[in-house]
Image (tube, rainbow, N blue to C red; front, side, top):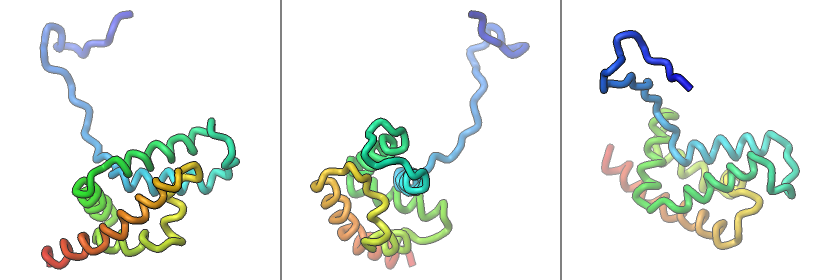
Length: 133
């Protein structure tokens, strides 16, 4: 199969760069996929459903991040939303809010880790906000 080469690019080692798009933070991805999963009305007992699988994947990715990476990720999410990371953590630490972020198929230790880390993140992010002010 012959590849398209722009005129004047033959023999050139330079390639065109695709425009850079800001990647969503992992937490933003988790929020979006959880919202889509909730709105989709997919049966929760079918593990083959793509949204359910993606929700679990993004959730596990979030859990795998080190605490410092989670803080940076929350700060990136906050910057994209135009709010402080402290506002995000204060909102999502509430049980009625964060329950949707946890996939139905998450294991009890995963649920506990997610909730515990938000409890740990709250004072850290608050201290960071105080230092920045």
